Length: 134
Length: 129
Image (cartoon, rainbow over all chains, first blue to last red; front, top):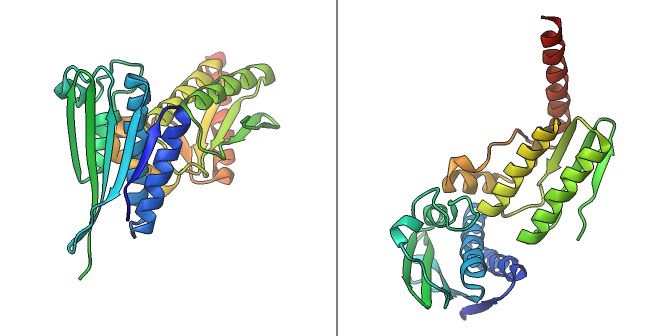
């Protein structure tokens, strides 16, 4: 399956990105709980793009191998960057009007979660994995 | 997209049928508050059966709306949450939802009427003592 790159420019794109994530998860055989986990995680990441950077991209790819089915999500922007990643990952911390549950909550939903940030470039990567039944 | 808010006797019933953007969610919140205030109802039921994603923002909007409506003096029950949405919300953090909930619309209406009744009884008792 080819990678799907979604431009995140407006709030409507948050919905488009999470629907695309849900569709991909369903097509690859993930159950409804995993579909919702992925859609919610994408929703959080793309909202952060709109809120903190104004615009960016969200790329979904199927990186499955023989043992496992995996969806890779890369959310990228050229905004101001996250000043203190450790603090951003604390539950309850928010520089905007959020609940402060976005990033730490997202991490709990997925198999793998990574943030890289410097002024002018932020990349959040996550993976949702399901073992193949052999 | 305007979400209908229907009045049924002493309560309002509304059902979110589409994925709302953040702005639309805030518009919905404002509309609900205005309607509660102008109709003088005693309760509000919000049905979210059709929502397949409730992220931290939507959770906050729902929580805040419930708190605001209670401040106005009416009761709130949320109903119809999808099992996978409940699962995701709890995994993200159990602080996210602090609203009275019910399985479906039937039970939500029953629950809200109980809440309204028990509030009236408490008020009466306070008056008597």
